[in-house]
Image 1 (cartoon, rainbow, N blue to C red):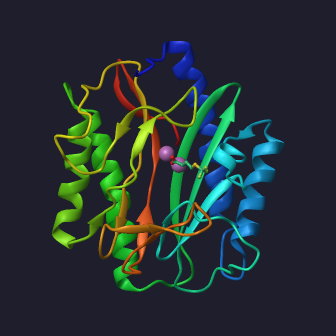
Image 2 (tube, protein in one colour; image 1 turned 90 degrees about the vertical axis):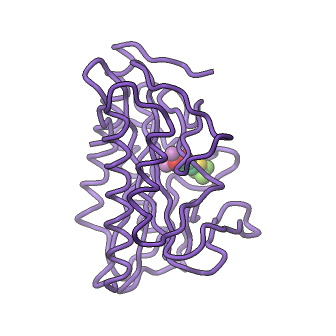
Image 3 (tube, rainbow, N blue to C red; image 1 turned 180 degrees about the vertical axis):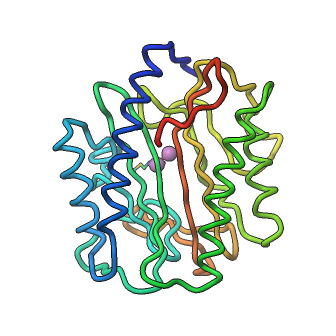
Length: 250
Ligand code: MF3
Ligand code: CO
Ligand code: CO
């Protein structure tokens, strides 16, 4: 069941999302070569605590950290580690979900460490563009979930990238994962609800330079591309309001 949010609830999610955006701005100036993914997680956890928010991922289905940090061929759910040191040329996605005053927001930014290859930079730029094109699609009158998926497909098609099929976006706001599922590819099997005022969804294209096929490692979390190709992930929490699709996490 899709739980619609009223005006005050959307205001609560907006405040939560703005705090999360502040965290990314904080991280923008700090993340870099030589840091471990654990260090990055620590910066995020400290910020979340300092601002009286709750790290929603910590303990979620037994997940051990505040953030998911996914380097290169890790698509999503990378577990922060003291042994994983960021190096020149890495592509690193940082996925953070936080709760503030009872309202949950979810966002992912992907960082280029030092100088990445032209191909990796293109993947990052196209994935971010796919997210914004999907948000534009959600902003159109009468839009449905498949319009979001179609926008991601159309953005990636010229590049031959793989669109991850086994994971998707989701409703968000009261909890980390709510209805509906928001896929990044079009299929009659996927939900195609009309977007309506009060819906709040996390839109999150997960894109690889090669195959869409993935494997989950034995740790039960880490999702890698099967062909070891580099992958990328961008995510925003988006509310459908009377004024259209509004990004909460900016
Ligand atoms: N933030 C993730 C998402 O976008 C959820 C991560 S769940 C965790 O849906 F347990 F792995 F943290
Ligand atoms: Co997320
Ligand atoms: Co999400």
